[in-house]
Every structure is written in structure tokens, then in C-alpha cells.
Length: 304
Image (tube, rainbow, N blue to C red; front, side, top):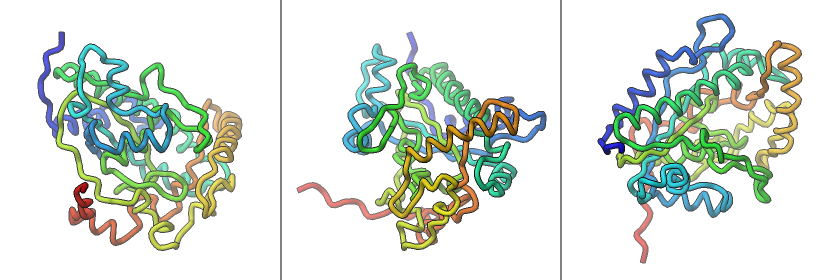
């Protein structure tokens, strides 16, 4: 029987930071000592936040709330949504990897393809590591992406979607908003990957410093930019948004290219994440400055 012991946000941050600094998985796996990731951004969201039900209603009934995925895999704990915290993180791409992929025109640079495979292996390791550490501290936890029933679902509205979205978890935790290409724009930019777990611990949620889910994208903010449109080799991005089917078809072709050219099993693209104003920062100046100053959007009026 696991005895419940509280854990702090600082302790969670330290677990993540130490794993990034010391895990041998944080590598391009190419014989060099180059790390896969820079230090992470970490955010916290309440399991009772209304945004999870909004996701479910908008994305589809198949999309889990934190309470649903937690109780599927830790049913003996019998918790309420408000007793849960979603811990989300952003892993920024390194300067070396971004620079390499910036030069790419059709298929990913080798470094980027390695990140997509080996960098995500690190991310999976981080999910498991954080869950194990929290359980050892007395907090039940589950990583939705590691569960055997996580799946990609054919969606009438979105072509395809998953039962848990790491980008949406990060958005809920105040870490970023979506761009024209559907990528998440964070304080460290769009060239990154995300991860999350759901834990039975009540930690103070981080505020979302935005009202609009497109607040950090220049195109949606003032109609300028659209650089990701030109960067996309599959022409999957237009002023109308992101065509997931075209994107997926291009990713399938990239598998053949990576195997033939770089001699390992991998894939990727990410051209829309580099060579753009949101590569390493929030390009909307007002939003960037507000975040730096800790300014928050006005609270909605109370219900009548």
C-alpha cells in the first residue's frame, strides 16, 4: 500500500532537470556527446480544470480527461478530478539540431531525424522516470502516452487525433498556444517536443497567460508572417491551417529517405518549426513582454 506523501513543484522540477542533465538517453545516439535536448519548461494544471472537458467536447469523446486516464490505470485510488495534477514539460531542440534542420528543404536533417526517434525515446524515459519517482515519494501517477490503450483515432473533424495530446496538455498548463501549422509556440519557441503525466497530488496550477489559443502566432495576431507556409515541403500548410493528411503522407516518404540516406530507421520533418520567427521564442511582442512581466489576461466575468 502506497502511503500518500506530498511533493512540491520544486521537487518535480528537480527530478526533470536532473534526468535531462544526467540520463545517457539524452543523446543524438550518433557517437558524439551532443545532447538531444536543452533544459525543459515545466507547467502544472489542475485535473479539475474546465479545459479538459472542453477538449473532450471539441476533439471527441475518445479524448481522455486526466480523471479518466488516471482511473483507468489506478482505479484503486478512487480520486476526484480536483485531487489530480497534470505535470507537463517542453523539451526545446538544441541550437545544433535547429541549425541543421534550417538548411533542409524537403526532408529532415539527420540530426532532426535522430531527435524524432532517439529524442522521443528519451522523452518516454522521462515519463517513466517521473512516474517512478513520484510513486516512490508516495504519489500515484500515470503517463498517458505510456499506457497500452493510448491510441490514434480516425476523427471526422480532425482527420486523426489521439486519446491524449501532449501539446494540448502543455497548452492547458500555460506553456504555449498553437500556430498556423498546429505546432505549439512556447517561451522557448516551436522547435520542441512535449510530455506529461497525471499525478495524485494537489499542486498549485500555473495560470494560462493567454485567452486565445492562437495568441502567440503572428499570423493569427496581426495577419503577418505565414513563414511556415513556405517552409512546408508538402504544401500541407495554408492560410486555412494545417492539412494533416498531406503532412502524414510526407512523413511516410521521409522514412524511406532517412533509411536510405542516414542508414537508420527513422522519420521526421519539422521544417515548419525552424527558419520561422517562432523557432526559439514567442514572436508576438506584446504577448512576449506580458509573459516576461507576469501579466495575465483579465478574468472572465462570474456566471449570472
